[in-house]
Image (cartoon, rainbow, N blue to C red; front, side):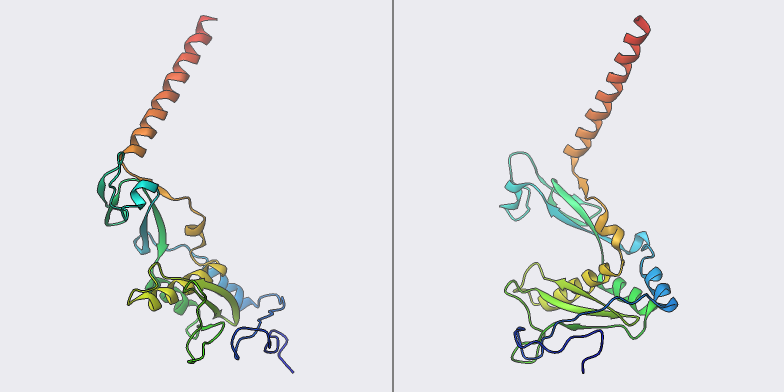
Length: 214
C-alpha cells in the first residue's frame, strides 16, 4: 500500500517511473516551522543580482542592442551588462546562494525530477523545461525551470538552477524578489520622473495661490 503522502504510479503518466504526488495537509512540526521561517529570511543586498530584460519591442528585434529610433545601447551598472537603455532590471538570487540557503536550513535537502526519459535522465517537456520536486525538512514542493537558450552548452545547469529557485520560492525563499516590481533604467525614465515631479510641484503651487486669492 502506498504511503499516505504519495499516490501509486499512474499508468497514464508520461514515462514508466512517473507518478502523481498527492501531499495531504499536515500541520508543520516545530522544526519545520523553524526551517520555513529561515527560508523566508531576506537575502543580503550583495547576494541579489539583476538581469536586464529589454522591454522595447523594436530593440528586441535587434537582440537587445538598442538599435531603434528612440533608444541606444548603454551600460547598466545594476545589471552589469551592455543592452538597450529601455530595459527592466529584474532581481534574482544566483544558484550558489540559493544552494547555500538550502544547506543552512537542511543539510540533507534534495531534488528529483518528476519524470525520466527512456535513457534514464530527467525528462523535459516540449519547451525544454524541467519539472522537479524539491524536498526540504521533509516537505516537498513542485518547481519548474527552463534555460533561455535550450541549445546552450550550459542549458542543463541553467534549467536545474532555475527549477530549484522556482521550487524554493514555493517555500518562501526569495519570495520578496518575485513580488518586487521591476526596476526601470535609462535616461528617459529619469526625465519622465523629473517632469512628473515638476508638474506636481507646479500644480500644488497653483492650487495654493488660488486658495489664497479666494
